[in-house]
Image (cartoon, rainbow, N blue to C red; front, side, top):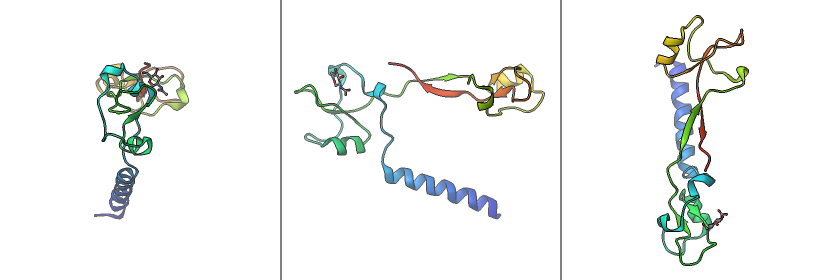
Length: 128
Ligand SMILES: *[C@@H]1O[C@H](CO)[C@@H](O)[C@H](O)[C@H]1NC(C)=O
């Protein structure tokens, strides 16, 4: 393997390991917003707030008699085309057509000049 490949692989490995060490990605506020009866226990009875969050669960102890540590809902996301032309990340090549760009699942806009016309979506969380 050449040095570049080894470099890239070690970066991936380090990132993967640090993700494991930090535990799960915390749920967003929207993922934890649900009716009390929809709450599904996460963790064990009497789990602390810190342990609950570390396990990637939602914590809310405002209502006694309901699960305080509960499983988050799946994250609802939507793709949007960024408005800021300078924030565009190139998804095509100079002179790409709208059809070619759409086939790649990217955003297409020929305005303004001097920035990529075919560019990646951003993923944003849906409001709740
Ligand atoms: C906790 O849950 C209650 C009942 O669902 C809700 O009204 C309240 O806003 C929640 N608190 C937080 C901090 O999410």
